[in-house]
Image (cartoon, rainbow, N blue to C red; front, side):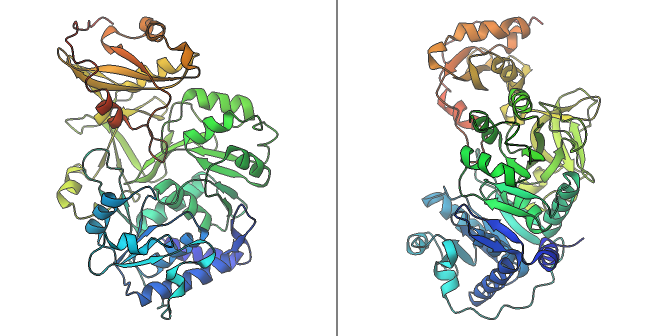
Length: 510
């Protein structure tokens, strides 16, 4: 197996003059130019004392130069640490204290302010558009020869979102990155003729370790967009072949009148991930464009592990089949024993894609793996007879009401079928008699249609009484993180007192 850096070198040799990145203003960086910039940045990092095993933290705007910085870090045997641009103050302090990077790369003008959160040994430098910033301005040492890295050596640290407790740094190895990249490239038939529309952030596994890695290792090109804009993306489709996005991309594109079968005629693949894609969006997209969105499943600690097929049926509401070389099982929450087809349990995964450890958390690492080496994802899922996996929800989002397990997605799917509903989220909140009970948080297309009884009445005949929400709350939008995932922990906190008064016990019919 070859590393991402080695595969990038192969791509440069074959496609050196080809544009790797194309920016909205027309600026292009070729494969050869990105390699030259990578070598220059490797020299700059070396002059700052970066050696194999050192962490390089990066918190900048989305720039093509950052791709070269990422490759330079890996070339030196360093550990790349991308950070969300929304992090400020105490959040950054935690990451700096925990990861102890040798270098922190920020946006120009932020060095002094961020240095207040630093400690001894951290060099704060900046990188901006078109080579601006202090990193490239400093006298660079001659870059050392690329370090021979062990495939199982750390390549990157990605911090989890930290919705409960402190964020955990998942340590991803060179093998994790390279194997997952090669697997996806083959599964989605991605190659040098492809042109990707890249509108994702590059501090997240989807935008960096899926999208960017697949491009730089195959000789493909990409339109490198700093923000999502539906009109811009539709305008780029005639000269592109692939879009990788989150469900929000597709719901917003469906609202644009320019989305037609003709506009998407040159596109061969639309991929969705990082959050659940509704069956409604899947069907609407197919009807409007003639394309079936390919939904896949992954997470920070595992990369991508499951995908609907490139050739074959892409089933709405499922994340498809386990990828080649990756073992996935649905197991009992307490026993870790594999469950029969059709039974809901915790999704567990094993394979070369699975991370090595949580940074500085050996006990937490042990807790998250079974005795036979499977990583416990914390997601609840179920396999159908054909081996397609469906995600039911997060284990922590499971509502246990009066001793009964309630899976929020089952209720959400029914509510979302209502013609007035744009989307919904069901969470468990404290209930004096039942321990907790489900509450539905609903976003309507037209707020004037807000009638809780109408929503409840539409699902009542199809849902056992104990599963029915005890309240319906309307709001303009659901809270989401940068990748579009609904923040249910925030909803649970916000509505914790909603059912504070005693309620009549729910029945158990059905």
